[in-house]
Amino acid sequence: MQSTDFAEHLTQFLTVYLPAQKNASKNTIASYRDTFKLLLQYCQEQQDIPAEKLTMRMLTHDLVADFLGWLETNRNCSISTRNQRLTAIHSFFRYAQYEEPMGLANFQKVLSIPVKKAPKSDVPHLNTDAMQLLLSQPDKSTPKGRRDLTLLSVLYDSGCRVQELVDLKVRDVILTDPSVLVLTGKGNKTRRVPLMKNTATLLDSYIHENKLEKPWKSDYLLFTNKQHNKLTKEGVSYIISKYVTSARQVSSIVPERVTPHMFRHSKSVHLLQAGVNLIYIRDFLGHVDIKTTEVYAKCDTELKRRAIENAYPELVDSDLPDWSQNTSLLNWLSSLK
Image (cartoon, rainbow, N blue to C red; front, side):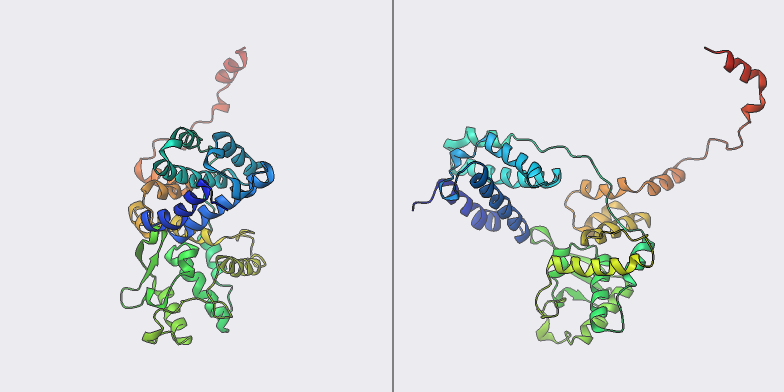
């Protein structure tokens, strides 16, 4: 069976263009791949178009728009997820228009589909008391508990993404003064983030306890599961949820649902509350654009209040007269109709 133009373009897009020309991370490629798996599923189930017969000509503006609507209504995807899928489709069609100029008009109609505006929600994070309670839950008397405490402490203290955490190698931990962690983030970009003394001490003990200090083990994974295989993002989520359950038995200040990314959000908000400049936090998190980092400043109303108090003198006197004692004024107000 001869392959369709869609199959050829998609294969080149995922296997050559994204990894070799755009230097996209494996997570980005996996996300884009999943988008097109859903698109093929939609075409098969809703349009009765099997994958082997799908062509670029069939991928019209209306079909793609209906697919996005199907994601929201049939699969109950959020607007944010819908927009992520659209980003992948836009990227593919921008690539395709240079590979197949004859389809330019059709491709540009798809590219004109706008991102849907979504209501902005607060950044979910834990306050310092809740984070401290959560980190106190692992049992330090057992090897598994010590592993979990080290893992959660690194996740919070470094502000890393969960994928960056599970990808960590022993060589990425540098415990000479100053202690730093080398993280590989989106687009395979690396950054070095400082570690606080307590986290560095935990890492040092963990590495020696598991005999990972040998030079020939430098490429070993830092954190593994009980089968000594690489931890998954789902595995990290499971570890967190286990300690959330125990922490909530102590206090309800810990939310019912805590995700790995909330550790990153929490660290960012705590840095802001401590007075760290937004530019430094941007570099710490590995953000390309400062606008991405500004979301943390917008979410913390207490931080805004303190900033305003520090910037402006108190002009309103709290010792105001009691107008209820002024009977003539009250009589005049009562006469107003």
